[in-house]
Length: 501
Image (tube, rainbow, N blue to C red; front, side, top):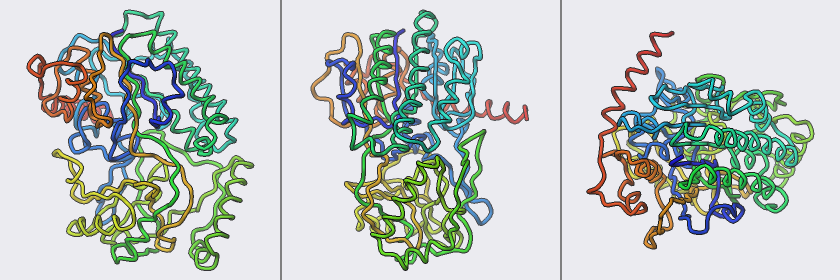
């Protein structure tokens, strides 16, 4: 096999020593993701362009439906630039690809010379080749483990479940070895360590006991990947760390007159396929929560949260409010969506008044948050005008919060960190010394295409950096305007999908 890419969700640079099988002569750098969420970051990794060119900014796309906002689940039809395997097909490169876990994961769009399997934690399983799926996986077993990993449990039990998932992927690579010659390019996405760390954040502070067993298995996966090819890329979409402070963005916007309290919940969520289900919920009615905040001091609220956390683990139930906190999405000039993300992460502020974008950014930076207008960090035809992006800084984690919560509270919370990792081991690679310590996540796709002797996209943001790593001269590389080709093919796919309904 010519190239293998192993995508490990949430792998932080500080965790690399726990993967000793990564060759010492490989390139190891941080990978920058200014929107450190699964869908936008992985899409940038797979396309080689920033979100302003591929159009994915989060788990959901936010659109006005009449006078209300709606959150629509992102699908593969929403990607406005071809992913690596699609670029290979559009450029008619004779490369046979096996894509396990494309992002976005649903649906698996048909693509020439590609077998695509989507067996991630986000949507129902989807695949273009049932025959290949049956050769590689016991679908019932791996989906059972993926579903089990979503539910609250003890860290020990979660480790066992994660081990089952990794065993399934390791077995798949062993089965792939017996199919040698069938594929030139393998992309394998694994939802670890991210999903485990969301369920067991204590593992970040107790690495030897709660994280190393997981990485022992991940290291076996790296070994198996190296056995398939001398050209290996290990990449992650973001890192993971424990932040000291929680910053509640909606409270700040409320205090400055941009957000208004409302009577109802916020954001209608429209999902594609069978997405995340919330079962076995103990409900706490939201109407009592403002009074709790007014009456009880932070120290008592912290004790209550600890009690609820212990209860949740003991009963294996998710404890949550029975409705999203209340914000007036129509009357607010700006607000952060609540309750429309699988993870408790705030990265997008929606603007009903686009003229206040710079003012919102200035205010948030005063609270220790990195905030940006869209055109400050994105470049391309799909850069939104009604969005402000928020990224954590230092020890401060931005979340949506409510209009009655404390704007800043000292609550240690584990979440996504801006920098993922990129490790590259190519045959005959000399590891240039002038490679920056931090690279943009858009560098990965041109790296893959170049190693497969495929044309690079004219629109790709970090193509020159990829050529430097591969020690190639730009004059020796062909270029294609992939966006034009993709626009035509994407329209054909959407039309065909509508005709089938």
